Length: 374
Ligand SMILES: [Fe+2]
Ligand SMILES: [Fe+2]
Image (tube, rainbow, N blue to C red; front, side, top):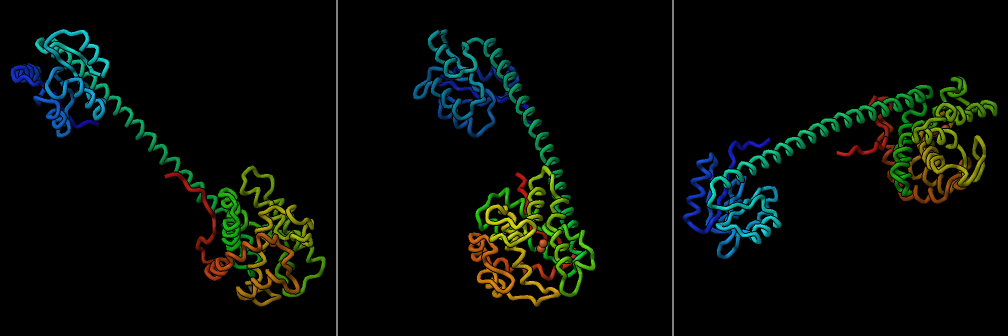
């Protein structure tokens, strides 16, 4: 909103007599005014004061009223400039109007001056009303925008919390895995980023990978928590966590949940076709499954299990790259394995920093939330 109460008029005329006469007329009409006897002084006055209307003579030495008008239109395009002349000259009138003069009047006619000032004042008011209206609309839009952003943040928080609680539920069933699921979110994000996958993919895999073992909720405790060697039949039941996880998560229209279903199904498939549940190989296994497979095996190698001691980072990397009696490098996508090698230090950092956060209640998920525009 404009804080100005009065309309200030700048009068420009090289003839002292007219300068005085016109300023008396303008003041008598109730407008405070400033005066300049040349174009340069007028521009200084415009720069230093809040001038609302310019009344300028056309014929002046050095710079003419038309030149002044052109300059004013460049610097203050919304300020109405009324050009005045001592004589009615059609050519000058047309030139003035063509250069954007608000009006062209005779400077000796007080009534013309009064009319021009009334019109210019009304014009200024309509402009400031328009600006105020626009500012009001912008304010409303920005308030709306803030409300929408707040709601989106709330929905994001809700989503994060739900996935966190869902994966925690799976972890409660199997206390030996600790924050394995959350760590998988971090590893997968790092590996997907290093592999140059799209931002959309990275966001999805950061959500999807912590749910990879969700199907374990359906495995009976006596098998899931068994402290000894599993029979072949029990092993088959354990393996069913892939298809169970898939059936829990499949059919969503949300890309991250759809990816979670794929990851649940394929994270134990192996690149050489020796994995489960379907024994598919190579690029038949979706990239998200191939990524989570490397991360899952790395984390299992690092972790203590009822059947094994934890391996160091170096040992885990060596097993992934060169194999041991259970794990072969051929199980993995070779390109991804090369990428893993490049960023393996980050895996170690993730394992070390998140290992101690088990059940601390701290949000340790890796979710790459889409950035809300500020
Ligand atoms: Fe699994
Ligand atoms: Fe796992």
